[in-house]
Image (cartoon, rainbow, N blue to C red; front, side):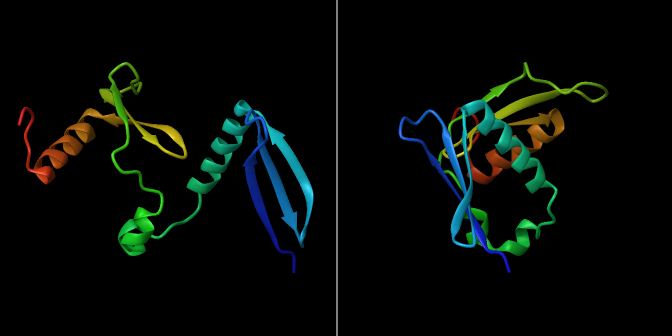
Length: 129
């Protein structure tokens, strides 16, 4: 049976990401990726990860949900990034993750309003309080 793991670190000058793949105790694969190559790899990994079947969040328990959480992330919104086609009214919401950088979500107006209402109701504070 083949066993392996992947080790990812910045290089000494912190301008590239070093990828080492250990198979059966040795490092037969090694790569240095610049930032654009690293971004491309992360996007491909993200797309493959999104295709995997997962348990629903409610089935994972609270510790699984908090594993990659960020407390008080920076956030930005923009009506300039929009969906196209019918029902395209939308707003972009960017949340900054400490590991993954800016993650942008485009929310249709209906979903943005529902999220806003939920946040106001849950925190018990209205705008201007």
